[in-house]
Image (cartoon, rainbow, N blue to C red; front, side, top):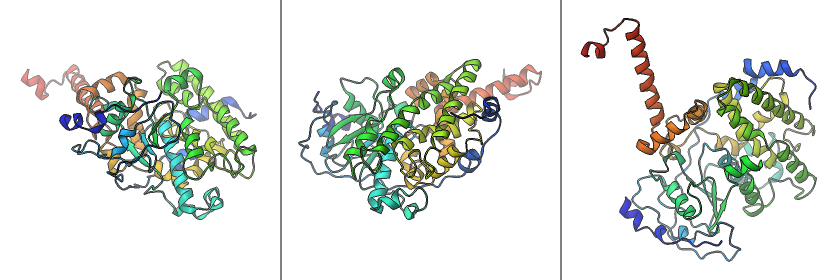
Length: 431
């Protein structure tokens, strides 16, 4: 496979250009002690396994678009067709990005999810071709229009923990990042052979940026224009949307900080801040009685930008940090249930398909179990161990971190038996 990779056209140089009055204490205890209806009705339900077809391919060379070159340059060599012809993997080729955009992403990553949902919403809109039905907030016929076979865009999965083992997606990312990014980040969008990146993780944490460069570009430039920013384009709905995005911008960092903080005292402080922000969102959701979205009947990027984090609060924080969304936040709970029923969200949060199972170093197929598996090492503060194990022996479809954890638990149990004087186990007899 290495020889094939060395002979790939990708080895040629890439072209590049340059608030609420309720009892805070009671709600705080509620957030930590009992599961709300949001968990029972959404988090614990079994997801549909929505399988999509393999990626389409083309061998036709396309001419590079005459449009302006992006900040990160171009990747015209990616449009020549066959990639890694002998990788038995999931991606042997991607379509020319002159034909359709290609999103390189991870299906367990927050910002990848936001961009992916934007594309799926565009796909649903194109399928239905009726904005009133598409944006109806739960009463239209769009529920039958699942975007299972997207024609507007293509995707390539990339597993960052397996960066040293080069799945096809990571190989593409490393080629795109050559000379500028030692640690390729996702998501990346290839459009008309331009390389478009999301705001980096460092910039988001340092400057509090929202990480919505790609979603805004997708809404403005791909498929039907401006359907995710309100029907009035740059008017009042767009203003409200941007205001909500700004008001809720701390949500990802609060989620991550609460999950990763080793200090119980600091976790209580973070939990209080997170609960306060959830109450703000709950209050914002009642500003427009027509609902059910932040901008009333209009579904916008303000809703998409917070959905993946709310999903992880429901599934991940409830398991690893005993943090629940209180039942008193009825607007937020209703919003989450409506969001989960949108076709694009149902596809984005479905149980893993075969392509995902054959790309990532995780084993669970169920969506909720998958998220718990992904965030396990983070919650246990063992990210370095997880990454080292995958650098050494990681492979798609196998969670080597969990294998080692199980072996360590077995060893501890065996030692506990021996320490209690029950030394008739096989290893003690042998020794």
